[in-house]
Image (tube, rainbow, N blue to C red):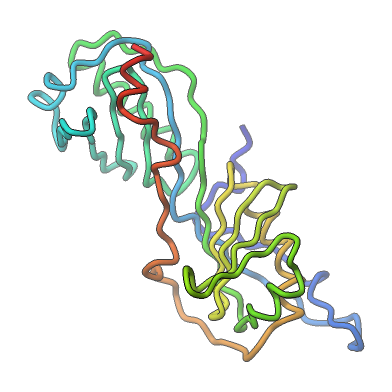
Length: 239
């Protein structure tokens, strides 16, 4: 899998898509930074895992009996592994696809050192969350009305516009502040999705915004892992 773009900061030249009708074609090129906030991956251990033994012998682990899983935290690379007795393991919190795979392999090696016959298999990147801040505010009400076929805006339920793209497959949350969060199956899709959405939101731009270093916005960068994690009862049936 290509990981050339799997960096926390992706700088993509969008100058050719920055033109406005009625203005000269030659304009300054615009660069946008895409911050990869979370990479979710999964793999199979291909053996039964004794959760109680992992909880007793492992380091930085939490046994969640009611959910039928053990949570293991790793530092290098930083990620959190959710472990089920069926052998399914889901890792979240990595900042790149490379780090996600390294974290998954390290988790597998840790389980092997506990005596389990772990075979690292069926690894895949499930979901990637990217965050991008536009250099201007966005008139999201007008934007949602103009793109009714792909955009959905319910201000009573969520402050942002939900915009779905089929190719590349991605779901975006567009906020009036100019912040855009994008969820996609891989980093490459996030980069293509930002390239796709930039000229569309540029048409409904508001005031220009001077932004400092991004430290993360509460509520805009959260990701729900429930879609990637199967119910513990279903996992027990796979055993």
